[in-house]
Length: 59
Image (tube, rainbow, N blue to C red; front, side, top):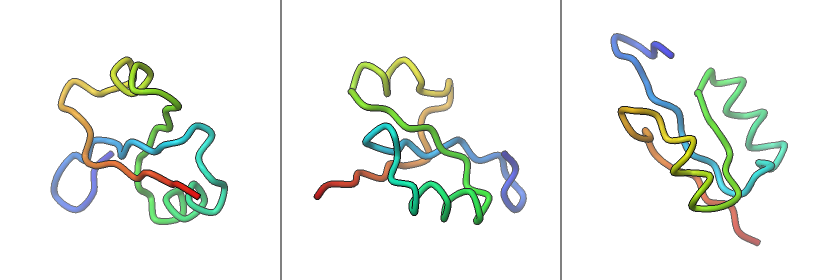
């Protein structure tokens, strides 16, 4: 995704599925994201350039 003048790698979200309000907010803001339920899944999904950041939701 291009955000401003640069290509932005996706954010990592935990858990999978991401909480619907969070997913909706990121989608509305045009932020790219991928959800993962385990560290192994996050590693498998990780872009070549790495994650832009991570959001961890805990109750």
